[in-house]
Image 1 (cartoon, one colour):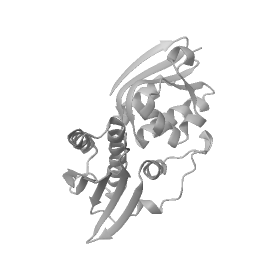
Image 2 (tube, rainbow over the protein chains, first blue to last red):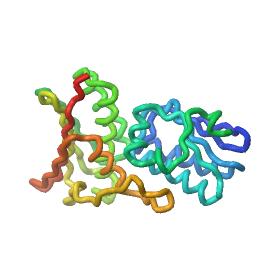
Image 3 (spheres, helix red, strand yellow):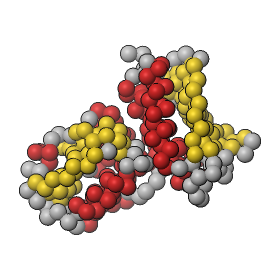
Length: 107
Length: 139
């Protein structure tokens, strides 16, 4: 798991690559907590994420709730087919704001 | 029928070995990337469930994971010596639950139900055994 954080127009953009699973979820959650004070909101870029399990979904959910509590935007972008299937089955695609690219996400 | 088995300690770090085991099996059997991801996901859900909820502390127990290919099905079986727990008894999860009402839990078993063709739980000899089958897509 590699986490690359950037700040784009008031958004904390977290680019994840590799696996978001039981081993890597704690590191991602820590990065999310640290980035939570971004002015406008948070974007999780999943373009290079090739695997997510339910523990990973919980981390995404935590981030969404954190942003919601602070009345900020939370966007997931760049989700690829296998990860998309897990997002769809769990209903996350419906309850979260999903965008194709990080440019669309920070618009 | 081709079958492979691995014994893992009940520790989170063992997930890395489990993932390598599943990937190696799929490579050897020529199974698709999509199927490999599904099997990895399902194996992790069950394994992490036993590690986090089956035993109060990490270490000292073994979890056996078996993968087999039988005809047009692939079968994944997980065996542990934790207290009796049938994950199939878990209440049905509603994927339409809004963000505000979402709570931790229930998601893993929902994924198993959706991704696998058949689930079977058995308690025998002081062990939990969950067997899951999936039809191998023909393309």
